[in-house]
Image (cartoon, rainbow, N blue to C red; front, side):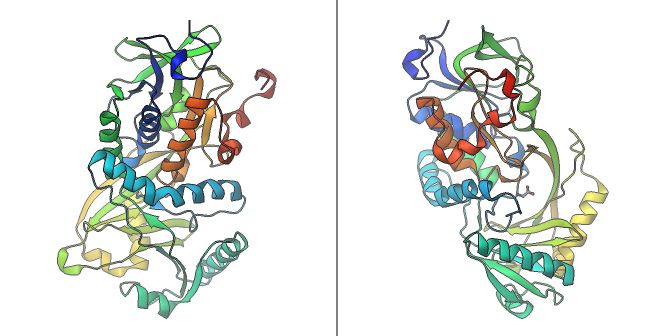
Length: 396
Ligand code: GLY
């Protein structure tokens, strides 16, 4: 039915060039960039602009979230972090909206000897990886952030790890997509359409069939359960629950914190992200509980307990929201980007803890894939094919 070309000219009139399944920030940035390149693009999502970004804190933490064994991912994270200022300017221009990007830096602190040891190891890894990070004494940390607890005994100052506001980012992307001519189908895509051995769009929950020359699975953790996708092609993503709180800093308290403050307390990450609009985001739990998005007393208690150890003054602040979301986790914590083993089907999912950070680079990578059929060099290690059963893969 479709020509094998991956360019717009290869798709018959009346059929979109690209259908993006999922309208979270990853699906939206893919659609926006594809439409900018002249592809007729549609998005299927019952509530575009929603998804995990509605819960995310928006840390752009390439350096402070570095983990042993994830140096390949680090390169992609840094590439995306570097693009953020330009990406933000372009998106704000295209949408006419502020996205809340703040070049504020991050302070990762330690409370006890174990935390200090953990931070020392992270610091050594950062330096070995050529990253900028400065060790501070407890007193130096408190000089930067006077609300920190007296027990803070040291920390890492990382001036390059910034933040953006994921809810504003999603809204701006939605508007930019609309202005670029992206068509929205406000229904869930429930089944991949096939034309022989080629993906050919999707069927929606209301029975509508949306044929497309190329289809992108960008449905976050739900990308792994799409009907009609052959078993060996399904992205191996799973939901990883995160509970997050939002507090409000009254005007009279400002500045409460001037940068993101984070720590590992009792083995779990806790971070406090202060927005310029007075919101203070406290996150996040990491729970392997399937599709559960219940906010639990235990989750809220642990977040407040750990955040209070870092910044005792938070108990004075109004608690305005507690919410849980699902990160799309992959087996190696890295995203799946580009062509799958099924011709015409691409993935843009599995971004796990880095969805907001990786939004700019994902848009650029997917636009290149959709227009030229080529995975750019920087994204080669993130091909979905690394998880496919090699015996069932067609020759490259
Ligand atoms: N990147 C922060 C989180 O996933 O909790």
